[in-house]
Amino acid sequence: MANQPFLTDIQTIRERARQHIENGAVTEGYRADRERVIDILNEALATEIVCVLRYKRHYYMADGLSANIAANEFLEHAQQEQQHADWLAERIVQLGGAPNFSPEGILTRSHSEYVEGDTLKEMIKEDLVAERIAIDSYREIVAYLGDQDPTSRRIMEDILAQEEEHADDMAGLLEGLQRQHQSNA
Image (cartoon, rainbow, N blue to C red; front, side):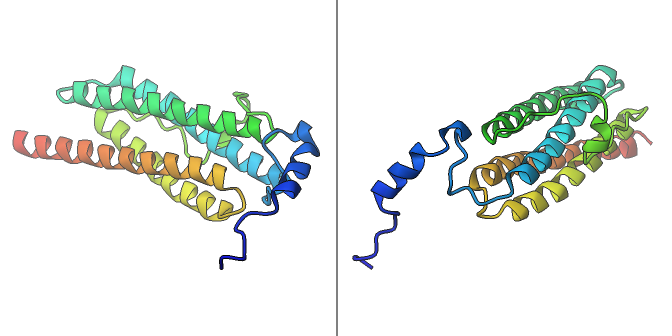
C-alpha cells in the first residue's frame, strides 16, 4: 500500500489541467455524459421552479384557522426551493450548459405538477404529493450520477434531504389539520 500512491502522478495532473482550459471545471477526469447530466439538472431546475410557484401561490391563498402556520411553512419552502433552483443553475453553468428558465414547456420539463388546490387541506396535500415525486425522482438521479459526477450527486443529495424534510413538514401539517377537524366535529 505504501508504494501505491492514491493520486495520479502530480506532473500528469498538471499537464492535463493545462489542456482544454476552456472547459473550466470539466476536466478529463469527468466521466459522466455531460450533456445528459445537463438535461437531467434542467429537469430538476424546472421541478424546483414549479415548486416555488406552487408554494408561493399557497402562501398567498392560505385561508382558515390554521392558515398562519401553514402559510409560514409555504413561504419557507418556497425560499428553499428557490435556493435549490439557484444551486442547480450554477452547476449547469459549471458543466458548460445553460440553465433553462424559459416558461415555455416548464411543466413538461418538471417532474412535479402544478396543482393549486382550493382549500388549505388540498394545498397541503398537493405540496406533499409534489415533494414525494421530487423525492423519488431525485433519488433516481442520485443513483444515476453515482461516482460519475460526485459534485452534481452531492447537490442532488442535499436537495433530496431538504425535500424529505418538506414532505415531513407537509405530512405534519396535514395530520394537524385532520386532528383539528376531528376535535371540531
